[in-house]
Length: 384
Image (cartoon, rainbow, N blue to C red; front, side):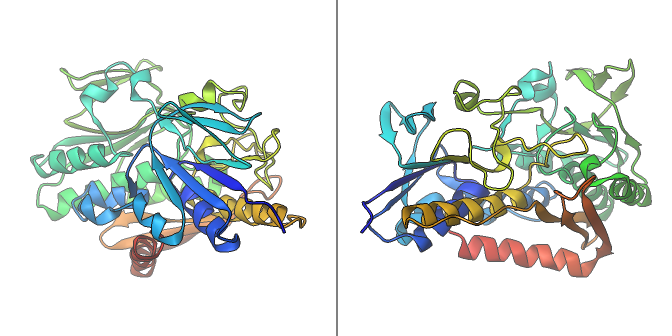
């Protein structure tokens, strides 16, 4: 009979939540499954897009992480201050905890401070607060308002989100009877570039169908909040009345300060097992960087964190049982692409395919929008 083990999961986002649930289902009660997060609420991030256009309330898209305790998962709230992957030890609120297995699912840190003036001038709709303030700004915007949706760095999680936001904002302003001039300024050379030029072209066509100008390869250097002006590295500028932005991302400081950090600060893992170089330590989701053959990393998205979490949980459970872990993450993923007016497109495929990902985008319809609504409902009602 195996000795009791302690599995510690850092982070209560999609990856951490799924890893905890799957481990608890697969392990005997004598084994501890502990989830640690600084936040008390789990926010269903895909619904932030609906929150920013007034189609959801903040209360409707979050649930307390503490609900996991009903399933036999220990939940601890606190700041993760130190992480030692060699000893599999984590320090939370001054207290050290050692794990037999450690799953790092800390996500990406949003860093608007890397662009002077950005935080003061606009709304970071990748956060609950930012989506709420953006919704209020849009509701108060008069007809003809210049709304800029900005990606402040070339790589960020949820690659479709800024393009969805632009189309949802356009539809929201039009429905209010106060249509605005919505434009996208992107640091990247094409939308969702990792999925290939066909996918990028399809997204650009969707923007064009909404008469939303798209300005690629515009790396913002600074933002003047008083003048409401963006200045880009190529010398151009853009004025705005409302600024909705995706901030630069970086690995969380506790990872950057640990031996887990790779050359770019993110965690390097085996792309199929999500194992790190340290025995018993795994990393999943937005905290990792998985290079693809075409020279770009696997996108940071909840669907990948979900799949990776299931693989890690299966293999940890197998290891505890003294069995070989044969679960593998194979790079498949999909996502809905909201376009407003009650419609969405749907894209998906094999991101590990070589020499480039094999991804297809299905045309927008009410069916796909309803699919996302049902997915949101199922997640909030069954995962917590």
